[in-house]
Each structure stands twice: as structure tokens, then as C-alpha cells.
Length: 246
Length: 373
Image (cartoon, rainbow over all chains, first blue to last red; front, top):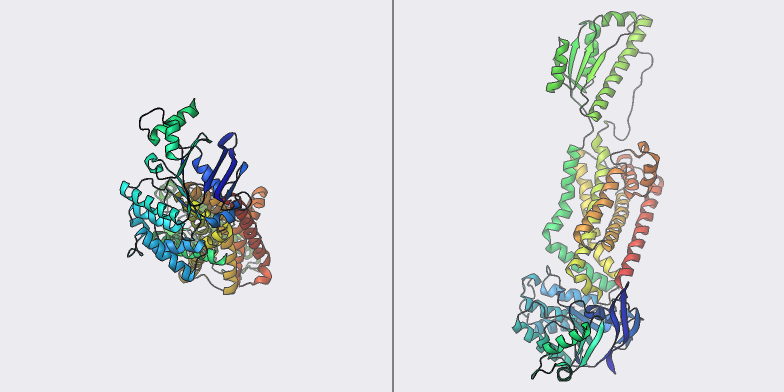
């Protein structure tokens, strides 16, 4: 069974079509990369998949739940983390964990277990009482990921999770994502950094609301490399976007 | 649902606790405002400097002057001889009013002929001038009645009919007693609306709201968790103003504390819901602050009967005041603390407050639900 099944997903805002007839599947345990320029429709798609925004037409089934029928059910099965580190900066590390655990209904022993997991994963042991504001960007990013997966969701959405973070922290973050996926978690990640997309098993490129290309990195390079001897994903991206513009 | 609301509530308390500046602002600025307004907003006018041009210098004229001075409203500051001096005295601000007694005043009065006393009042402040004129007209009116009777009966036995006014609930007519309930309404409204609106819109701005919406928590749990801490803080702050008003301005407490607490709570729930409604409309803290000020501050100040009596407003404005919750709150508050009346008398006000709270809570949750999913 696929973790995510998207069929002809469309979202309009008035006369503007932000997401236009998008269809794709994400297999369980897969790391699926979602690329696109700013305003291409990445965030709108993710918001629909997370049950935050109703599709105008088409369907999306996430974790076996239809997002239009049961957005609440979807929210229980997913974790979401975005680049705008959505932690409470004036709360401590521990207080953030307690809050996010609380709104996902975690308590008692389970919360204690998951708190320990999140602290270990983010490398924040011994900094439980530090104000989140005082943490470096890399740490905050890992804490945000920890808070997003406290409830052990089978599917995780990462919306440009590595913006504004140094290369070392980025690499460390991708190692965490790989660990998550090897544990069976499905990861859908959007990114601006095309070199990062190499970590994804499959990549979809969205342009002007339409799904313009999809496949593994080597497949995309062969198809859209533009004849370069050793095409990179940058070449692929530019070719796809230019085709869309033409 | 209870546990998720609790998680939000605990978080909100912790944030409030961390944000000392906001917390102190919420708790102490209201009391500070009370001090400021309580002492500054004083409609009582006493010790008006009075100059007198006595052109008669008779027993009767001196009687008139002492009636003015003994009333307690006027202080004799200067005797004026020349008419040109009157303007100078008023210009320099030595006197706010000048009493001019004509020659042969005593004679006229004794024979029962009509006599005219002139009172010149500095009109640069219309309110003060009106009050001063009122005092003067009253004093002279009383004197006039006495002289008329004396002249007619030929004996100085005093008036036949006298009015002895007894003013209940606020016998000294201290405007502080009248204004403090209004101040409490105004301050409580302002802090409750602004603090709720800002705290929710801040989460929108920072992006934490989006993160919370991604979780299965419903809008209801979120809002309950979010408003309870603000309810506790604004209730504490409102009761602090009441206590302070009792200490400093001699505000009495003649009614039931329980009823007071109920009334304040009802009013605050409406105010918090109004803040919530503002937060569903505004996207930035700046807009939220302005909208909150507009809908909380102006009506409470202008249309509640706090400063301007509702009965003297034009009819369209009077109609508008029926949806201003502070109007009912004020009536109830004055009733409880000044008159000591109970729910048997104040139930219409309590019902009105409850209706307001229910309608606004309903509207706010409707808008929020639509925005949430």
C-alpha cells in the first residue's frame, strides 16, 4: 500500500490555479523530494495533504485517510515541520516538548519516553532548560523535527526544513531523515537545495502548479539533462522549468 | 479535548510568566491608569477664585459676598474698585469669576424692588464656566427668595419653604465614586480585548499557529486553552483595580462580592471573546491592536455612560449604546458597589452581559472554525 496517493489534485484561489491536476504516489518508507520554484504550488500541495486546506477537486489519501473527508484523522497520522522553526522561542526545550506532546495527546510514560527520544535525537541532553531562543539554528531545527514526530507519525512532511542552516547541520539533519525512513517512516520533503534532493529516492518537480517531471535522480538526469556530459539536478531543474515556460 | 486544552493553557501561562513585561503591563498598568484618571478626571469644581466689585458696601451686599464664600465653592481673592480692573483680573487669571454688586443694592433689596447683580465668568473652559454659573445662579436664587420674603413680611424670619436636598449613595457627589466603576469597565475591557487579540495574532505572525493547526487539536481546545490564562490575569487585574479604588478613592462595597465577581467575569468573557474575534480578522499585531482599540476603547469611553450620560445623547446614539456591554456592566457595577442592590434588581444587566458574551463567543468560534480547517 502507498503511504500517500494523490489523484488529479487541484486547488484554485479565485481565478488563480495554485495546484493543477497533480497526480503521484509515495510508497511507505520512501523519501520523496518535492522541488519547485517559489510560488510553484509546493506549499499549497503540502497544506492540502496535511488537511489544512480543502482541495477544489481531485483527491488525496494520506495514511489511508481521505484528506477531504477526515482532515482530523490525517493530522493524527502525520508530522509536519517547516523552515519557519515553529517552536515557542520564549519557552525552554523541555516546555516546547511538553506542549507539542500535550496537543498530540501524549502523557505519562509515553511522553517521558518520547521526550527522551527527542532530546537524544536533537542532541539536546543537558540543555533541557535552555530557552529555545538561545539555541543555534541547527539545534532548533533538530528540536523542531523532534517535536513534530513526538507522536510517532507514519508520515512526515518537511517543508523546506533546512533553510538558513549551515552545511554541517544540514548534513546531520539529512542523516536523521535517512534514519527515520529506514525505520519505516514515509518522508515527503520540499527543498530549495538541489544537492540535497540527491538524498531522495524519487523526485517530483512542480512548475506553475503542474507536475512537470517525476522519477529517480538518475532518471531525471537522463531525461532532462539537456545533453550535458555529467548533468546535475540543477541542469534538470532549469530544463524542466524552461520547458514549462515555453 | 480537556488534556489538549490544558497543554495549551499551561504553555500560555508559561509564556506569560516568561514575558515579564507583558505580564506586568497587564497587571499593573490598569492600576496605574486608575491612579492617573482617578485623580485627573475630576468634575468637582471647588475653590473658584472670585473677585468682587462691591459698589454698594452695605450689609446686604456683604451678605451676598459671604454667601458665596461660605458656600465653599468660591474663594474671595480680590476686591475690585475700578471697572477697568475687572478685565485685568480675569486676564491674569487671578479670578475665574467677578461678582459686581450695583450701587443702592441694599436699599432696593430692603424695599423689595428688583435688583440686578452681575456675574462675569471666564468662559475659556465652557464646562467649568457652566458649573460656576450654576453655583452662582443657585446662590443668588436662594438669596433672592429670602429678600423677597423679608420685604413682604417685614421680618427677618427666613424662608417659609426650604429645600433640603439629601443625595443618596454618594452624598458628597464626589465624581470619583461615579467615575471609578466606569474606569474599571474601561480598563478591564481594554486589557482583556487587547491581550487576547495580540496573543493569538502573535502566534499567527510567528508561525506557531500554523504548526499547532497541523496537529489534531481542534480550534475549541486551542481557544479555551488560550483564553483561560488571559481570563485569570484580567480578572486579577480587574479585582486589583476595585481594591485600589476602595483604598484610594473610598469606593464603598455595599453589595455582594460574589455578585461582583460574577458580573466582572461575565463582562470579561465577552471582552475576551471580542479579542478572539479581532484575532480572526487581523493578520498582524499592529492591525489587531488598532482594531481592538477602536472597538473596545471608543464605545466603552463614549457610549457606556462612563463620561457622557446616555439619557442626554441623541436618539440614534442611544440606540447604539444598547449593544455596548460596558453600559450594562457600569449600571450593574454602580448598583453593586454604591447602592448594594442584588441580582433581583440587576438581572436585566446580567442577562444583557450574558447575551453579549454568548453572541460574541458564537461569532468568534464560527469565524475561527472556518479559518482553522
